[in-house]
Image (cartoon, rainbow, N blue to C red; front, side, top):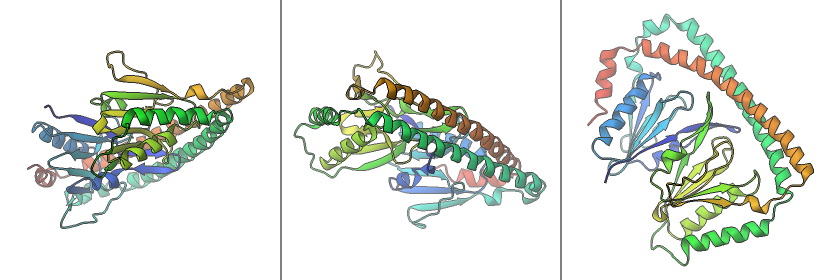
Length: 355
């Protein structure tokens, strides 16, 4: 059996602030390497090479992408039998909980030529201030978008047939599980589907679901119970002893966008904006799960919704503009850090990561 490479985002710029799932992934690992300091682009290359190393040994791996820069990684999870997490632990800062047993710290600060970095001190101070400014403006725009989205949900809820939806959900649960009850405790894991990036909203759905045979595409309006339904389905699966992976929304930190039940080779996910997908004719297990059939807004509400959608898209446009400025300052900071690395010291520490 060939090994697989899955791609996720490890953190997301949400309307409630930065959300990440790294503490959850740590709980799955037998060994966690905290890579501290020298946060430039060279660390992404190291993670990519580590992934290639383990993948060549027929081990499943998961790459966690940096939301600010394409093809840049901030973590690597090497799956069974190793269960090793390599984590960029400087920004956001993560500290070991089980130092000396599970957790190992690799300090990369000593790889920096302080004199080279000091020569750019004024530039670094200015870029850091710029980054913080655009960071705050981006999150303010996202928070505004979430508030507008809440108004959108109020409009659609008014004409939702909740009884019809509950019947549809009950039928789904019956079709999936029947009377099955596994003789074990279900295990719950967490990932992120996507996030806002300088290129707009991006997700890794196709990678996540590449080996899932039965994919259900939820079609429905905002506020009509998609996330609540998936949380209910996840709870039912766990109660019956099935393992569950909850894949969280990259804009609303409290909302679920996908549930995967590996033992049923099944997943169900929100396939509406900003991640619109449709069944692949080449995949027989793909089908639409239509809950929009239970919602019938009036013409007046449809007009109200159009106005709200326009405001929402405007707020998201602002957020994308600010995240681009944020990323621009961050890119310069990382390039300065990379230019100050002493290669000999760097290679000495990085070599220790490869068995």
